[in-house]
Image (cartoon, rainbow, N blue to C red; front, side, top):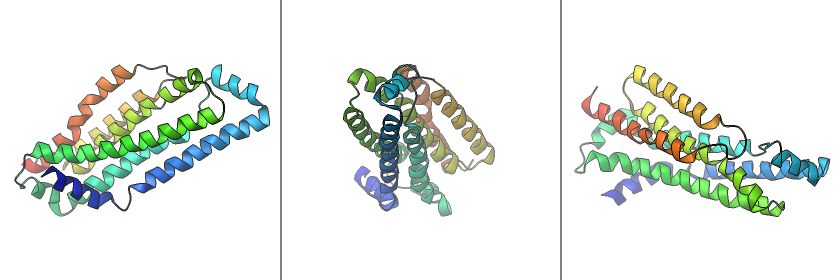
Length: 220
């Protein structure tokens, strides 16, 4: 049954899955051109000083692509299910609702993980091309991990907001998602974060879409 659900999910995203990857490619191109332009205008030593001493982030566009991609995928995965009460009808299939809900979540997370892996490969490639050592690239790369957590959280929050039948709960979920966004992105500098703590704090969001879907099933 799981392959059938995955095929169903693919039918909803097969025409739009590529757009976040194109946007990520554009963002990485912007990152490369920004580094190149800064190096040409100010010199390599000034660029290194900006990165090492000021810990300046030249790749903020990449971070926003991760967030927007999560909202994009969740909207196309869950939106169609909420038209004409299809989500409620989905629970009448001869399979446990846990399988239905978490297969949808798994597909969304798999897409975001693939996007992050795509970004990671090119991010390291750009760094090596510019002559950055691993000791410099690794802290910069770690700075993108909270935004990956933001993307996973944003998928759960968007899916829950779309699915939940209550306007009040939609508002509460939106505010909670925004709170997590602020928490995960408020750190300054490279690698000045505790990834394990952030990950553990985000785990409850795995239940958000499940809880909203169950409310639809129970007609609350």
